[in-house]
Length: 332
Image 1 (cartoon, rainbow, N blue to C red):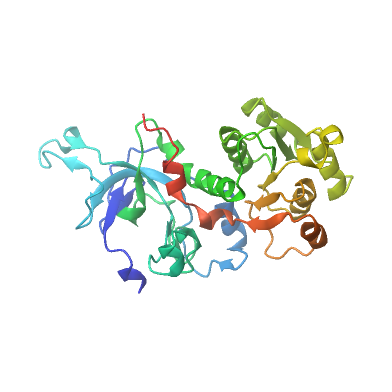
Image 2: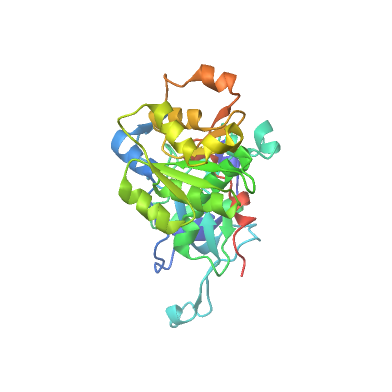
């Protein structure tokens, strides 16, 4: 059934192919990156209910050049060799530069039909067993899920569109808006992307938290207008939340000035609990980080009484929606 899902494929420099042949010219650099989830799969063999039960190539963040297209592909152009016999390397024309959207949904379920294809239960996600990922020289991928890159976007940036799409999906779902305060929990790679995206969305003021002072120092350099807060290990979640709220002038402004949106980018249970106490009444906690399969210490009564929205949980790997990113990236 899965094989009938998408018959048109293309080939790209990842060595990504949209079709059935896998060949590339081999000159692409920085086409793919290893996400924390890939490393976790490698070390632990599972993320929650997602278990690696056999051989599986990891990787789900990649960009490349189309080398060859399967029959019927009209949206992408493969590489061409004007004179394949005599001096082929001098006459080779590269194919389209593309970013690879790693999740291939079924396209027929009610979620896919409703435009929420990232929630498809039958998704074939690159790097999640049994579907091979992108840390390989060549890859075949459906043409529909290979997106052309503008000339202004590099291959390294193209590979980063996958985590960016997850963050932007989270920001859109949280309803982050112009002039409203937000907190980003975690100053790692995803937290930094969330910080940059929140700033671009017009959110203000912005606070980013972390345990490590060096990470916070980099975040401050990255977005100078943001405030930083080093999480205090010696106090509980409510204590840290109170101190974070003070950065929003809570004593003078009151509950209205507390952060309306918290983007939790660590997945660590203690950080999620802190986020729950940090968000203002009626606010939203968007959990983007991948954490434990079961969390037992969430302050449910507080969430209920304060009507803190959700928790809205976004499993980092499986909810990327490139359509959000490509509606916003530069095209010149």
